[in-house]
Image 1: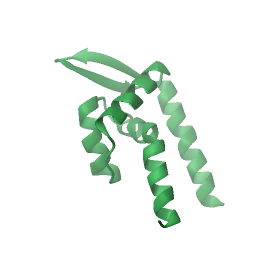
Image 2: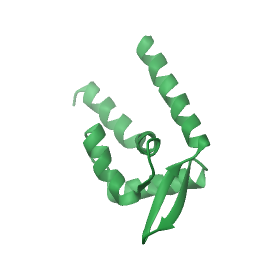
Image 3: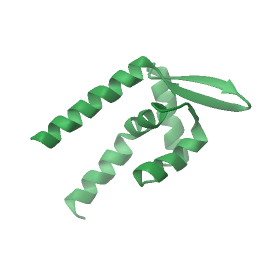
Image 4: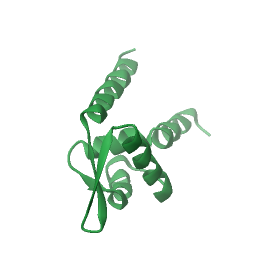
Length: 98
């Protein structure tokens, strides 16, 4: 396996929270729709269970808020989640400048 492919896979799967928060930073979404949007915008599929697990973890940590509406649970990013995205982006940009 090429190292670049390995890095890509690890970034995508082990940092799914980052991709979820980026999608939630533009509008609230329900869980099932996030999986398709991740594939559409970022070019990879996450497992259904994995995406929900990430959402639950983000909610527990205060980075997203959930609201039940129309038989769906909608998620929106909180200010804490926005701060995490800003810090993660700054970290990645600093790596690229090296």
